[in-house]
Image (cartoon, rainbow, N blue to C red; front, side, top):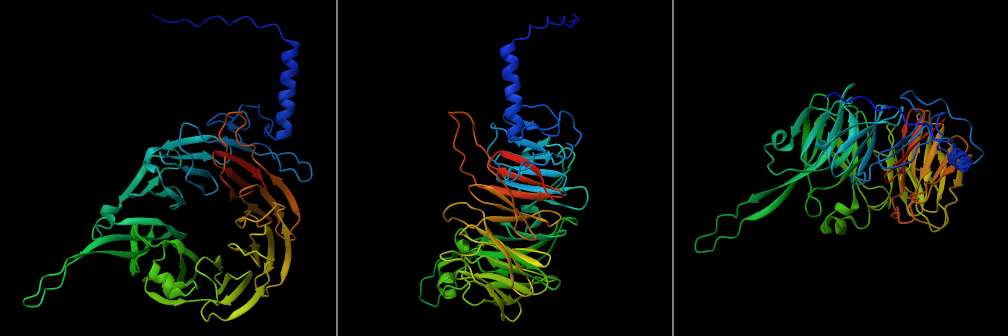
Length: 454
């Protein structure tokens, strides 16, 4: 039987009160920045995107009132039916890749439209560009290469296959990447046989020993470049490394303090260490300490051979290879510096006292320093620089603050309202920002806002 379309229902008589409510709703949405690029206003439910009504990129938003954030190009809400995002990354300024406990998904950075979901990418990390046309993810059990168009798995490399000589290898979080190369740590357990006892003596027990390695892997060629043995970390044994800077000849890493063993903490005597590994072979070249910088101290570096580290309440610069002090910037009372951000001739600084600033890399001269005006102290704000390096974004647990990177002019602030439902859950996640060309994507748990930036 062929079903015929039903005739259109008669148009209802307009309700003046309803028209007024609609008008007020549109006006309120405009004030809140929910009318984006002339598109229609939509309710922000799970998985919804507020944006233009078609797939065309939104026109350049109008200038906001002083201090107010610009109108977002789009707003995306991660579905409530899925677990909260674990990691978020920008792929080639085209996709926003979000991973959760259940899957990986991609949002078009131009329109805010969700393009695909992939269960294979559950608990993935990184979302790096593997060449021009693949999205790389590292899951707890395998490396994946996905199509950016539909999320289809193009290549799959299981750790059990790639590292067959290291049975049971547990791969830690990626330490960093540069171009097609990613660095990561891994560990596995081996059985060490007890030595043969002397005549008349009882044989000792075999021992279970954790062995750890630091790896370099090419995600375009899909092959291991090198591995080098490193001390095992605190139980379960995989040390957590973070790449401070990669240079032409070596890559500098530091180990997260939480993964240091008790013996390592005791031997360090309150000082942190930086390790240098040869770029081509992975050979450990040296291990150095920089003044009294602690294992928890925020640290950064540049390719010119300068290391920046929080020492006490100050930020100090050192000659990387000699540990010679170069300059020092005094911090605010009762505060410590967070991880600095290198951008052109400047280093952008952040402090627990909620001060953000800029320092000349070569001289250490303070260019500017301003407060985000978040009351009290907490963790130092995290810093993100726009693609043009003209706008500095500071994010913390309370708000997002945008500054002019050159002179510290405070441009705007932003706070997400969280759940508007009277019975809605309280959101405790901090803000974070990801730069993508002329856009900065601000995330707070499930909510994503794409703001235009200079």
